[in-house]
Amino acid sequence: MDTIFKKPAPKTGGFYESAYKLFMRRNSVYVTVIIIGAFAGERAVDYGVKTLWENNNKGEELRLEVSVLT
Image 1 (cartoon, rainbow, N blue to C red):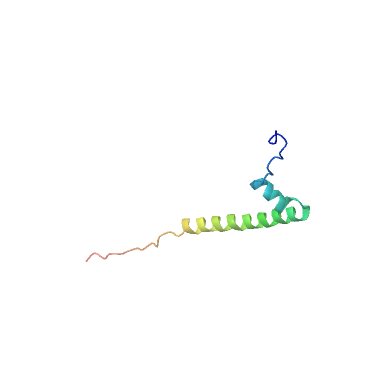
Image 2 (image 1 turned 45 degrees about the vertical axis):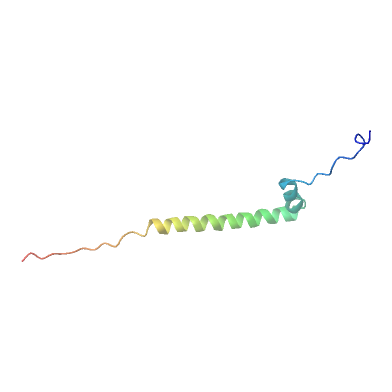
């Protein structure tokens, strides 16, 4: 009979609950995280595209050899 009246073990929480408690509980923190995330994402995409563009446009040096027939 004792097991029927025992309290259930408290939940430890998962990733989403922890993220909610850390970032989304207050509106000011939530908006700040979104703005910083957008800025960091924009910088990452800009760096990646620039790197791809530079690697694609390296090209090869064109050398022309002129041979003189004698």
